[in-house]
Image 1: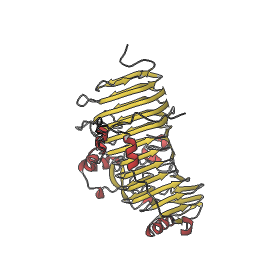
Image 2 (image 1 turned 90 degrees about the vertical axis):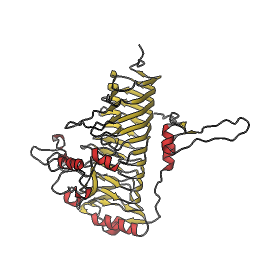
Image 3 (image 1 turned 180 degrees about the horizontal axis):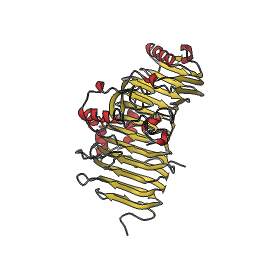
Image 4 (image 1 turned 90 degrees about the horizontal axis):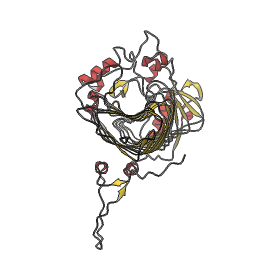
Length: 481
């Protein structure tokens, strides 16, 4: 497939999006015509250019020199810790994981450290939950807490990376971590522990509602909330490049409260419960490119906290570019929500392929009146969709799962634009929108979009009229007879 160079994102500097990025219009003082010339600027490229990618000193620290054993059975947690500490203390460099199978507990990164995996390296994570203690400051479904350590974790660090050609295998399966979701599909048996037991999610939800200090939201041992796989928490200048993640307990990549994040050429092949591929949360200046997502949940889900926690933190996720990626199985290709209470803005999706009979939607926005929040300035350009189950574009402000989700926080969704998108099989709907009478969905446009094989062309409630320009669904021009 040939990918076209995007032209749609080149907009004038005086636009809403460029104003939010702080880009000013340019003028000329040419005396001959004295005309103001506004420079055409691609705001997605401006975001990419602003992101700092970490660079590391030319020093190497091989984990085998610190006691790691490549037999897949000897626990090498201490060796990883010692190698990372030595690298950090000497000003930074690469911690090398050579070819072979290495068993470890959680890996905690430090500033100026690049955890680099060579071809043939497989990092197997322990199935013993006690290895992920003591608890650390982390997050579960948009709510901060003290819980089991993520498998790869960094807290308040700068210039960190996970790179190379190796594979990180979380070893989660129907006997380990996954049954805690409570679904028999993933190994749960009746009467067993699961996340919806009173001491787990209900307890955390109540702490969220009551504003319990995070330091007092202690879970971990005796509780059943699964850890994320890779989580840089309040970090700056983060790079994930080339590696493969598989068999995750929960969300795979979760950059939270982090700035300048680059995810490049990563493969996520993980079909467990809640196995989202990449979930930027309260994250700014994020570039996700050239990745393959084959997941048990959303391929990419942009988030910003759940309910009161999101409003307390109040950091929107913004300035996020997704390009050159392939989305296979998943609940959605690029999704915003549902934990979205602090809002999302300035999202650019371009030059991607989305195609699988097990991919539910291409672009999805989901929230409700407990979450509230906002989504604005979403630009989808030059995307090829082979097959999805439900819809090419779905916007839902009545999202609910397990329990009622109605409250007093009316979500605001506006400026959602698709251009140069082709869809061979859109499933049940071409466009599916459910807004709110109190705050209708605003300014949705489809331009140069072709959608085929939709059972229903569109279903739109409580939205301003969708604007269609040179667009066909099932060969018809929406709005025309």
